[in-house]
Amino acid sequence: MKSHTLLMPLDMHLHLRDGVMLETVAPLTSYSFSGAVVMPNLVPPITTKEAVMDYKKRIYAALGRVEEADDLLMADDFFEPYMTLFYQNYDRSFLEEVVDEIAAIKLYPAGITTNSEGGVSTFDLETMRATLEAMGDLKIPLCVHGETDGFVMDREAEFMSIYEMLASNFPKLKIIMEHITTQAAVEMLDKYPNLYATVTLHHLLMTLDDVAGGMLQPHLFCKPIAKRPEDREALLHVVLNAHPKVMFGSDSAPHPQHAKESCGCAAGVFTAPIALQVLCELFDAYGKLDNLQQFISDNAQSIYGICPEFKEVVLVESPFEVPEHYGNVVPMYAGETLAWSISDVE
Ligand code: NCD
Ligand code: ZN
Image (cartoon, rainbow, N blue to C red):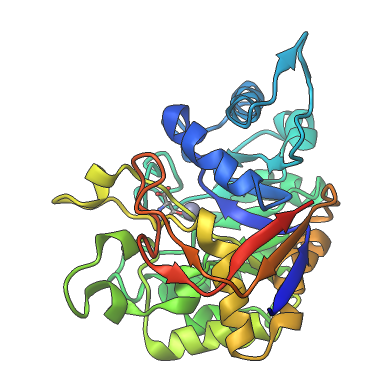
């Protein structure tokens, strides 16, 4: 039986939510990943040091780690939630205070996706300069949801001029183009030394046709929307060839079943429990399994300068039946059989 071992898998863009949803989804990632960059788009969004620390404690609690006298005791599965703040203009003194608690700051254009109403409404350099310069000095990466409010298929490509403006004006700032979906974004990668990207699983697998070409598939609807075949090809090219500036970020974004299978479907694809299995199948199909380690962990370690706890995940080419539900969330490929499964985690 074919098998493949991954070391310290990292998910550099993950939605863990809160409350019961957090309890449902957090263990599904912590089981097979060493760490994940946790998105701050809660209601209200995470904008204070206290909110970062409280959310981290709730994540540990959802993983069954107990809290005693303010010390977090580690449970048996090692998993690091890399916390983020929701971008606003922050003072340098605040950033100095919070820098050790966060891995990045996530910028959302206002109203562009789930819980992003408090995001940035105009990209005015002068208003943002002090924050972005301080972030560059303190080595806090800026993660960006790069979409304008234009026509839905053009939103990411239209955002490229904003990436160029940010990358050229703040050369010390690491800018991560989150969940890129277009050839335009791929082409931007090598133009600026301080631009990086995450790519999701679902954008490597599907185009708009899979979402809306036949019967509408609400569980595949997400922001940014999946694009054209040539865009998917461009993503596959950099990912399968382990471009050093490209990291895996699932953007696994769970919503309750009723919010997806409804009039006014929430955006987000829930992929956390199937990501590693499907990535193995995909890389294997292209004869590129040896490049998966860089995409799933090594590139992220160098870009973020992180050193995750040791974790070894063994995958085998043996069928995995994807559950119809995890709690009240429907995963991608629900009820289908995948070719690869996780056989061991150490
Ligand atoms: C995300 C969510 O639900 O929080 N949704 C999505 O479609 N990706 C937000 C986001 O990353 O855009
Ligand atoms: Zn996201």
